[in-house]
Image 1 (spheres, helix red, strand yellow):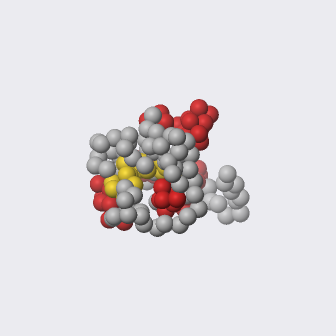
Image 2 (cartoon, helix red, strand yellow):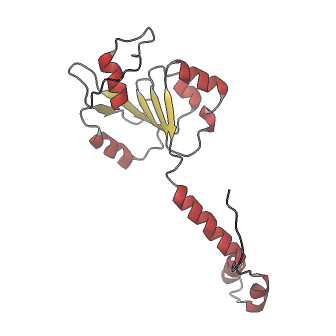
Image 3 (cartoon, helix red, strand yellow):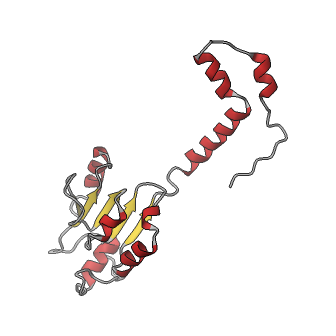
Length: 178
């Protein structure tokens, strides 16, 4: 938010209607500067909108759900890249997922770069959980937990000999994670 206010407060609007970048620090909007408009796509939960509203009180307005992003300076969620390109007021998009493939196309990058729109994502948010999940799946596969679980759901059997023959221990094993 600060960077957008810096640009709004320091520089006159460019021909596009958006101020160029500036380095003046203004943590709150100066008198007469309208608060930033934050648009969220419908997938953003209500409690997230409420926390965002509380955290930005007086400095930004969280637009109501369904109001679209045409009036937003900032967009939060997983909007379609084409929608953002068609909304010239948007200066910052934060994709609430690790992937941003729809934004990583030459024509989309060119259109957003031309007007200075920044796209960020949540790439590291689930890094630890994903790594631990991958490790747990590797351990489950080695110990044949899927087969044991299937037996418990169907015939309630416990074929120890069969499961032990197929199961592997990881003592001394090497694992490469890419």
